[in-house]
Amino acid sequence: MKGISSINDICLLTLEGSGLFGVPGIAARLFGAMAQAGANVVLITQGSSESSITFAVSPTQAALAKKAAEKEFAHELRTGLVEPLKIENNLSVVAIVGEGMRYMPGISGRLFRALGKNGINVVAIAQGSSELNISVVVPAADETKALNAIHEAFFLSDTKTLHLFIVGVGLIGSTLLEQIRRQAPFLREKRGLEIKIAGLSNSRRMIFAEDGIDQENWKTALEQSDEQFSMPRFAEQMEALNLPNAIFLDNTASEEVTHFYERILDASISISTPNKLAASSTYAQYRRLQQVADKRGVLWRYETNVGAGLPIITTLNDLIHSGDRIIRIEGVLSGTLSYIFNNFRAGVRFSDIVKAAQRLGLTEPDPRDDLSGADVRRKLLILARETGLPLETHDIAVEQILPHLCLAVHTVEEFYGELEKHDADFETRRATAAASGQVLRLVAKLEGSQATIGLQAFGPEHPFYFLDGSDNMVAFTTERYRERPLVVRGPGAGAEVTAAGVFAEVIGMGNAMGG
Image 1 (spheres, rainbow, N blue to C red):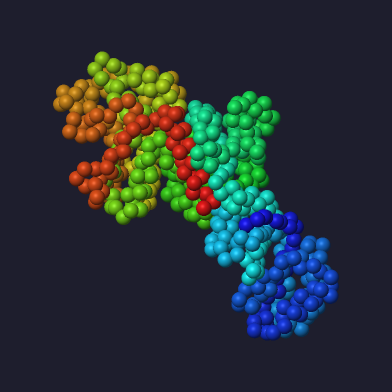
Image 2: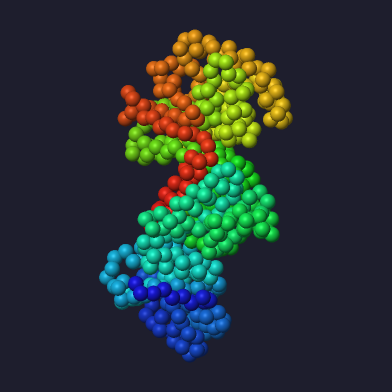
């Protein structure tokens, strides 16, 4: 292939009807009428069914061409053998040309894969038997995007550009941006991957740059922006830019942002997020998002929902897709609670450990989201759904380890005040387990269709006994791993590992884009 060309404003006219089938001279009459009217036809396509002929003209000649065709086929129109000419406006023609395409298998597939992966609808196709030119008609709004996608697919086959739109530049978001900045030269030189930050926002402001925001000075650029952040406007701007290989990253814990996921996926923009609220919403919405992503040929990924940077969802899906049967899943799914109970020893107050975890950035903004089991429940719900179970939040039984008053108060400060009053109760439970040589762990379990979460005691015969730091651990018992479960273990909380998990997911999504 030697080049790409485009005509940026055309109209399609279609003559169709049962009276066209098998009738000699239809094309001669149609295009003779066009010639007599002085209408220049720039593209012609006809299916083998012979029931329709589609051709393209400039918008200035569309009315003239329609009138000429209807005059020529006036009898057929009156008798219902053909339908009134259909006109489609606001279209463009994009063509790839070159002698090297002749007899070369896969050229068309590569072209349509590049367009399809970027959500570009092909309205019509024309290719001569010489194989020197393949032309496609696309919506005019997608012309630039189509040109960029085709250019990348054929002329930059060793380089792929990802356009990221990032909402949330707090601890995880800013860490991710720094990881991208540091790794950019390696990805460009060794992996042929160029990452551009096309949109960025915090809770107050947002900025956009089609050619990419300066990754060295994004903080200054964001603070100096005059554009106030709102999620509807952010989504509108993403759609308006209409960039190929676009990925939306939600680094927030906002439910409002997740309400836009369906719209974003429907605009052929992939999503990667550590925000658990979408995947743990109602089962109907969870399935709806998956269906929209599948329909548009884009990706919705949330690996970091369950184990930060750990490949827990990936491992589960690999087991299922390879034909294994899941018997049981057991996991310490909270890095926060893992840290708390790993460090809960004699002489240390339970409330002090919770405070230390929050200072280290291991907890949610309100530690009760962790200690109440709400965060673990979301994670177990996501894993259950990945196995195919249509569970809702209320289907998971959670043992409540916090006293009622700790949950009833309104502020975090009040919560700590109540928690300190119950330090002795937690110590009693810890000492009872220690007397039997055991340690406490908050464990999520899925067996069959039963999902439960509770505080359990484990001795040295169980892998959970040896957890330390903020490590997560998940044990998959399956048909293949029945005697010795498959165990995934590692840090399950923290900005570095979560950002790294999102980063890895973005790279994986980039490799899957464009084909």
